[in-house]
Length: 100
Image 1 (spheres, rainbow, N blue to C red):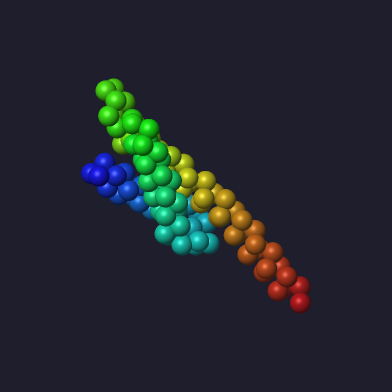
Image 2 (cartoon, rainbow, N blue to C red):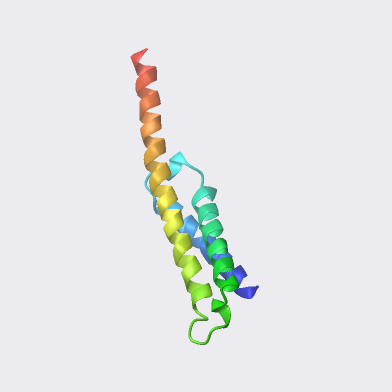
């Protein structure tokens, strides 16, 4: 369980770093990339531990590193998708209001 705790804490940190570095981070909350990162990392950790990778010699690093990397990728994907989608929707709404 210690490895899960460390993975979750690292995933939260990565999610917050992704949010802070996104230029459109005002379009969505700080908890969104962190939540996506934690969800992906915890699910990956569970799958890897259920598959037995935590107990194979030479592969015990997989449940420690791979979930954090996958969580970071999930946070980046969520930030890129939501940032561009929300910016486009805001522009469309503003254009509609200004046309009236």
